Length: 344
Image (cartoon, rainbow, N blue to C red; front, top):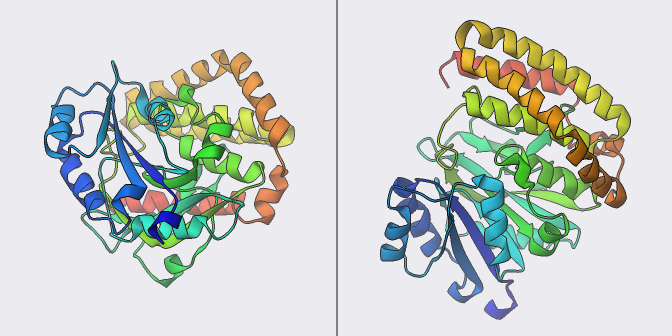
């Protein structure tokens, strides 16, 4: 029966994350999945903290790919996938730990229907196992998305297996054939919003993303990225720029115009707030818009690819419940601001 299980390649990108590797690798070592039916590939973005030497010395069963510089989350994963043998791939962050049945449950979810191209894990916090980090996600009209359940206590509503917009990139399973078909993660993103686009293309191209609550894992958050909090200047820049690129690449014309108008209003409000308490993040917003405009010619070609292969209209995303309404976005923004004020 083990031979009937699909071969899975687990890709872990790393940049100076040596302190996280032991917990992550040991949990993968303990997986209740046949050892000859999965592989782990560590793609190292030119770490200087001894990550590569540590992995090679203590976890010889892991394949290590060493890059010559930090290429970011997207390109590093694409490089890893090129070397992957699996029918499925899992993008897994280095600052995670997985339950023994995690991979079994993801594969089980993917096998329900040929139309399921991605499966999202139930992600809890590493040090607060009663708190949700991500239970799937919803797209927003401004090209981004938000995690369902983020910061909430784990409860029954997060135990329902159901379709969702996208899975958190800290632990998402994808059919390798689909991943290659869409060209992998967009390397121009470097990091951030790539998980949203992966889910968006899945739905627009006629496939589905399934949230699997029994695929449980734990996340320290931002171990891969290096900084916690979306208000950090580098994150402000990447999230803002990548959201705008996502709009132009993937939305229909009416929603491109609507998304850009809402983005300008929303980002102007954010920039005004940053002006008084975070000058570097204030500058990051404007830099993001400048670089977005510089990339418009390239985005036009990428937009054609989505237009050519799309099977659903944007309005179908609302009908299916994977795109948040304007009201839902406002409610979520208020909720997140309350979490921040309470020192979350």
